[in-house]
Image 1 (cartoon, rainbow, N blue to C red):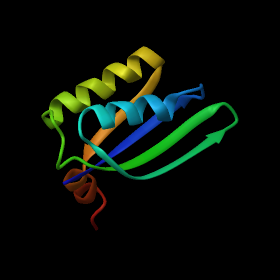
Image 2: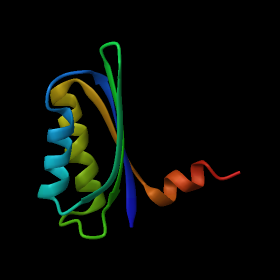
Image 3: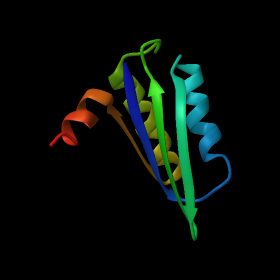
Image 4: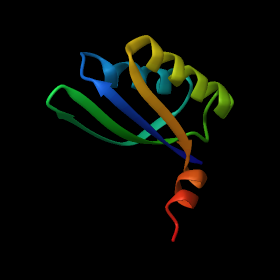
Length: 89
């Protein structure tokens, strides 16, 4: 199973490292990453494999939301099935 993680907010040192650390700590494999910085705004999309996650999906999303609040970022985790359903015509 896969999920999409999006991160948006003011650019600062260590965003990718902190998000990746949570993934590694929870057994979530990062498959693909794209990021860009527009002026001082950071935007990142990660495709991750959650099949080996050591925590339930809800606990994973809670941890990313807490990190986002701590850093002043908006971090959203969406299950691949939901993402695909939203973008199906």
